[in-house]
Length: 232
Image (cartoon, rainbow, N blue to C red; front, side, top):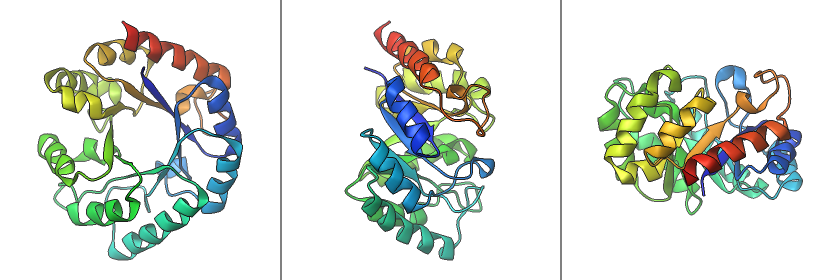
């Protein structure tokens, strides 16, 4: 069965995601900055509002670079978020050359353990995506998901590349969670290539913006769409 992950900003979003049939939520703050680390108190409220598994973003700024002080803050935040009830994390960083910042990622992966984690869309901004994929996979541990659009410009630009990667490597297909401007028309070719996990945010909000809450009816439509894609 396909996995549907929904971005949640608060407990109302989480409840709507659960009513609509989502499998998991990604909890973030400040989508104007692309999604930053949420407040542990907000996460605790969400935990009380839903039984869905939830992963929290660990990200200190709107880019994919991180400074040593920011990394220290994120390591402390990870501990606070564990205590608030998260089931996993979402993070990923690049260095000045556009390669995966293995040192920073490894330090957060160690803090995340034994919880699973997702390497987020920093992968799409890497200078050499193939090399970046290999680097991330070598980290191992409890990494189980790569959130990717196949392009820094989103799935409209990257869906063909993502389909090729998934079709050519079943292990990659199992790791991929397609997200970043995901549209309904993207689901069928991705599912046919073996992708079974999908990530939505604005698509389950009535006007597509972050100023309105998640709509359970739209989540339900996406649940049916990805399930049908997986069954095809």
